[in-house]
Image 1: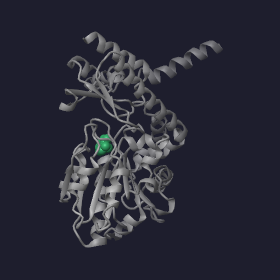
Image 2: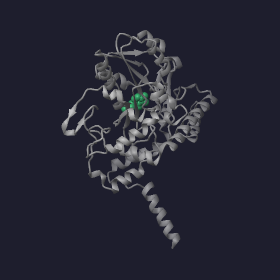
Image 3: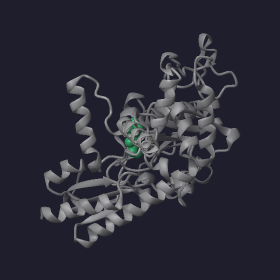
Image 4: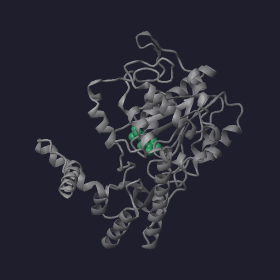
Length: 405
Ligand SMILES: *Cc1c(COP(=O)(O)O)cnc(C)c1O
């Protein structure tokens, strides 16, 4: 009897996870199948395919939260958050992460954003307002030519004069180029790329800060760090100082939730100093009982709950292990490519390996992202080593490369 019960329980358990109920919509079920088979080989983009939100969804549905319809419109860091929101949890998320990004807990302001881009939007908007408020002058934005395109797009959207600074071969902004292009009579809005898109380069903030420090005549400086991907894992490594506000003296930082943290839909974190917040324009919106400094009115109330959930369920210890594994597997991938003589490069601190582009079969089989750079012989591809890219899968990839020659 016991045995039968055990078998039944096992069957039920596996039925729940392995044979998910079909939706009854053929097209949808077929589409789901394509994802189940494609999962092993998703190498080219910085998403964590080991999402740990299963329990969250179970909790969410069994409690019937889906009909409550909360909205986080308003400021989560006030002492009177809006009632129909999850802002109390959002605030806890910001206060949990603040020390990991080197912020003084009493001097931080932040929100859970809709994405890394949303965080950059706030960084640029807050930066420009901060500088205008302090100097009564229009700032100039400086960003490397290898930074994520969202920064250029947002600078354009916000109508901010922008100078694209050349980066070196490996993708880092060149300090001398910044100095050459610097207009020291105007406020400086610096964007630091923490993870250039293709090569995974990190701007050398210390070297670039040194350039700015050499020019005390600059009316005011604001530094925003675009750390969408690397800002997820670096706080949990020995390189944590690189994303530390106190060590690097930036004013704000943006991180994505759907990259390292494994959210199943876009989300992110934006953190800034209180000084930044205090230098924003007031938008008093009485019906929200709030001073609306953030750009969006409605904001997602579920994503902060997911973040809060992951802090409890995964947390720093496990994130540290994942970060370490990712960096080890990155080294392993680079070494394996070296071993078969396949030209490959990787930046320090980075989990992104770029290499000579293989055949189109392999590019599509592994969903590799493609790039082009004459410095490295032209056609390139990259792998972003996330949690699901294990040594075993790397071995499979290397075999495929060898067989393709
Ligand atoms: C992914 C990424 C972005 C864009 O972030 P989203 O969350 O996709 O909007 C911006 N900057 C960098 C460095 C990125 O890696």
